[in-house]
Image 1 (cartoon, rainbow, N blue to C red):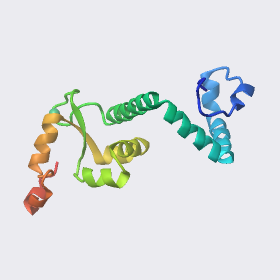
Image 2 (tube, protein in one colour):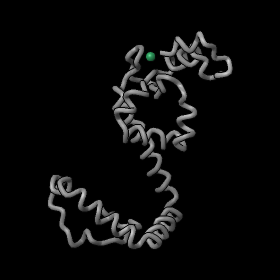
Image 3 (cartoon, rainbow, N blue to C red):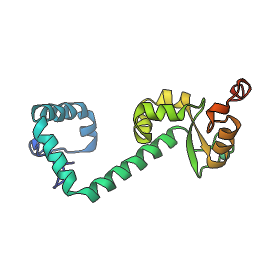
Length: 162
Ligand SMILES: [Zn+2]
């Protein structure tokens, strides 16, 4: 839905009445292609408008990106089952790399948010590599595997990765 203050001045929407959501879903790819085509044809203009819009709506932009971060994390938590792997609690959950390497992964993907986004788009990989642990069990695991202090990691502790 095009909001009143949207920076996207593309108005092909006005020629296409969207009667219902199902119909939109069925034709989603078409609309996506149209929107992308418009973007590439008017790239400079669109970017200029987006930058200007964001500059004038800093609060809104911040709120939007906070909400988006929360959504991505919430959806990833739901994808991973929504409970601690050890004690099945559903509160204070943290997303944990089963075999460690969370720091390197985060750096490789940019930041936490980009990493969560990536895993949300690759659910099979996410289920294979990630698990949910509550605060307590994540800390337990970190200390057990010396994840916080990799220099101390011994050959023996490698065998105890959970
Ligand atoms: Zn737990």
